[in-house]
Image 1: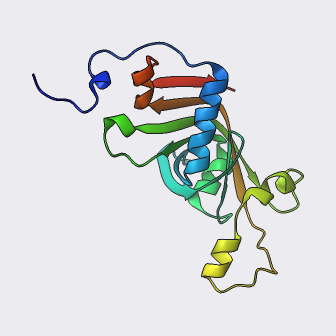
Image 2: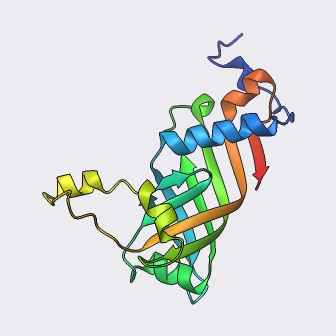
Length: 171
């Protein structure tokens, strides 16, 4: 009989659902422990556009900075629908962990009524230090806020406890 590292990965996946509070906790843990995602937008000609971005989060919302003229921001201004993929480094099937967020994005500029609610989560200080800029002059620029209406969370370790490795949170 062959030896397997994770025998609980063999066979069909369980279908049991996590309780909502436990699922929310796992998703927030993932969002807090990572800082890169890939966002997918739609260009004006209908073609897909996927871009890696550094994100910050406020609850289940993702916030990222970008130049106001960048393709991703132009796309979001024209079509607010967005998807974002957040994932942890993969070592093997047992370590597979990630989330797909589906929803809409708002593009906010300094002076927009909601800008001040989201700007404080942007950790700009390390960028300024890296570029030898003064910490006395915080930058203010375009930010995008992704608000998910659905998050599909995948974690194969859940199988070990009899739960489905793919769980969906509706917000």
